[in-house]
Image 1 (cartoon, rainbow, N blue to C red):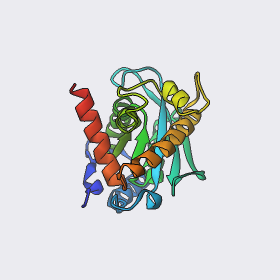
Image 2 (cartoon, helix red, strand yellow):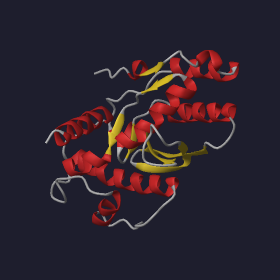
Image 3 (cartoon, rainbow, N blue to C red):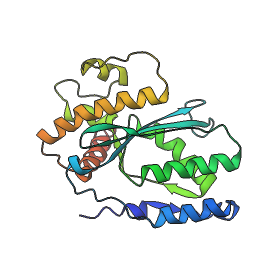
Image 4 (cartoon, helix red, strand yellow):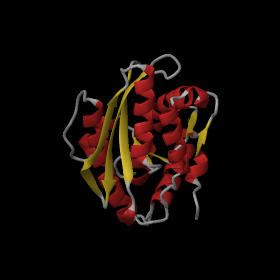
Length: 219
């Protein structure tokens, strides 16, 4: 089954003429790069777990301040596959930083908590700064955890409650990278449960995430 990731990352075109030549060229190279297959078992798939820092809760009014991410492969958090940026530089620097995250993520499935919040900020900044329609394959633990762990909770819970349920320390306020690592540890636990439930590939997990979000939001 093909998921057509390349088609989901489209250039809007409105700002491309305003980009520096090097950014435009590297953006075109990223756009032309192949997306990873999502039919492979979890063990063979690189997932990118991320969190963001913002100036407030609403993407239409507040600003994206930073991104923190870590890669996971073979079910393990990869210490040397981490990424962090602070979007406080000038416009040209911000463009290059945003491009660097696209290159780092390499169109892998993205994992976070509260996709609706995270994606709203990323979609806005990528459209406004790079003219990119940022629509990756999202995996949302907000909805997947109660879907796969009905014995723990059948409704979404705050992140810290899931950390406590799963025996993970880390309550209270954290910076984006610390939050990302907590989300990654939850994702490890969730991957083990997904495998026992015959959800055996990234594509199946993305589909389950979409279904869980749709069904639970609708009821």
